[in-house]
Amino acid sequence: MTTFSRSSDAPAADLAAAPWSLIPALRPHEFRRLRALLYETCGIRLREGKEELVRSRLGRRVVDAGASTFAAYLDRVENDAVRRQFAELGALVDALTTNQTAFFREPAHFEFFTTKVLPAIAHGTRPVRVWSAGCSTGEEPFTIAALMREHLPADRFAGARILATDVSTRVLARARSATYGARAITAIPSALRRRMLEASASGDRFAVREELRAIVRFARLNLIRDWPLRGPFDAIFCRNVMIYFDAGVRQRLVERFWHMLAPGGYLFVGHSESLGTLTHGFRYVQPAVYVR
Ligand SMILES: C[S@@+](CC[C@H](N)C(=O)[O-])C[C@H]1O[C@@H](n2cnc3c(N)ncnc32)[C@H](O)[C@@H]1O
Image (cartoon, rainbow, N blue to C red; front, side, top):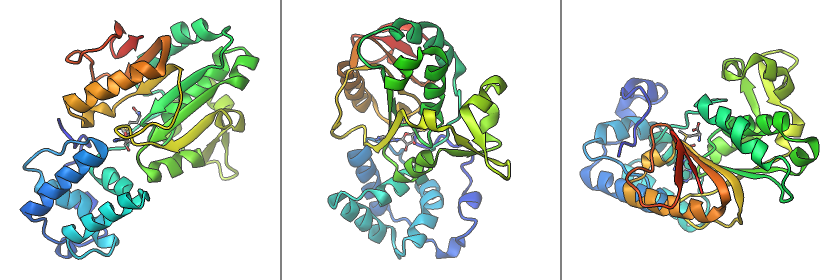
């Protein structure tokens, strides 16, 4: 399972601010320890033979954290985890994975959500609940919120809630700021842009409107640990997260999602992910969409 899905594998860009000579060597036992740590804490599989890539991606963070060796840096990550302060673990995950996301990413999902899922729950009695698991910087949950506002009756929308979680505190801070640059918002259909966003005075930053922000709750949650939350959810979006996990971790995750969904609830996974090799009770609906 690959851990590196960013397009550039070259060290140069990552090391722009930290000369290569300052980056400590990554010794074989440190690489092994890093692999074990990442797998045990986050379920993330780091492939063998990726030492140089890890050094290039993580080296800058090691230097910035004031550690003179990778071992000293890993001590710090472990210490943080013991004290249940996960900032450095999040930074480690950020350095070695991608947080890439976009408004309306994989639009077929949002077409299905709009035409099939929302009409089915538009008139229920239980409040609508959706979970964006691995929400990165917030574009996914805010896309969901915007569609709910467009397609649910006002009272159903007001009572609806979206839980948006990620393991990285850094991306969550950006998500909570709910402010995006001009490039990010080009993915939003132009008819919706105004209703979704407010431009800053300078016109180059765009804030998600308060009524959408009000229904989204961001929280830090490691998907392979305890989930201090209660279902049922009408839909779970866990897209482009499971690519980092091996089959065992994915299997457990999909079973847990099943229990979190209401009967008839939908699971959306990334289009490059599939439940094909796993054992589960979901029914396949269309590519990367499953129903309980
Ligand atoms: C590529 S982004 C996907 C964002 C969004 N779901 C999308 O498809 O556009 C993957 C996210 O998964 C998060 N992640 C990785 N391992 C995780 C874990 N064990 N628990 C929770 N989130 C995790 C990363 O921090 C990252 O923000």
